[in-house]
Image 1 (cartoon, one colour):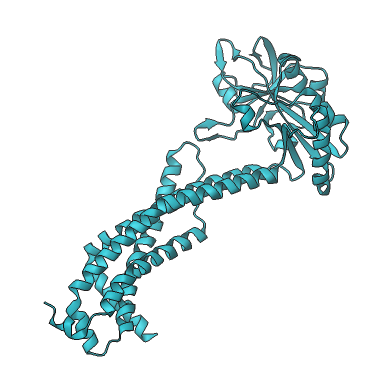
Image 2 (cartoon, rainbow, N blue to C red):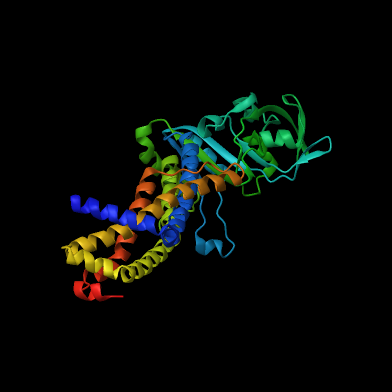
Length: 406
């Protein structure tokens, strides 16, 4: 242990004796590590944000969506859910507690007193808040009687409230959606922006009203969320829904499904897999600079061996073994890379925070501890690996020839 501590002390003394050269040598490792940490911190921060969003949706909630295979999509074909699918889930599939269809209504413009807003118009049912975890901040949400009576009422998002310059409490005001007038009954809670896009630029109207505005001849762009009465029955319910929708769409046994059924957990898992793959790919790409930094360390260490040939000869003449010389030079290369890695971790974390702050409403950067340890360990490993050749060259010098070296 004493020999290793002495090798570490000697390596540190050598690096301090050539501060500028040591800094320039470790610059490649520093930049590579900082790049990896910055990229990973941004992806991890965004992943944590999405996970938090999914946490509001219960584990018993499933979503039915239309699905178009790629080979059909390139031919201009597109599959849709139908209004009959909503009725099928409500009346023909046992084990479903709530059915919440959400449809995008194709209308042009929302206006009032000469002011307009380009917002998405969603038609849905009163259970939307419970299933999606979104609630009104002012007033109320839609109720069952709004749907049954086809009452022209609307709940607006905060961005629409701002764009139309409505009062802070707009309940009771009327706005025009398409060619129809709707009474405002509530304002949804604010969710902010992501990637510069507002999550609050929408209005919500009763589903049956939206259905009438869409027209029976049009194919609606719709998804249907539904909840299981028993959490343990989710898998069986998925199969019952699959059979019922296949029958509703008149699909033959040899035809693939033209729809997808997802749970919040499966959607979150898919996102996490995508985020992990993206992290690995981007981390690998920017990690190439670590190898470039390793080559720089190897080159400088080879120069150092040449410069210190007489020193090596003296050490061997005083009894230093091949292993002692090898350990000293490996420790120097590893320490050089480790210091660059540690500085790079701090700079990468600060860069990630800075980039996240510059992007409007982007989630804060997050650096998991496993990334810190992995980056520091890999940096040191790069230094040791690329330091093997110079260390072996130094350890293999003949002491007599080394002492003669000018």
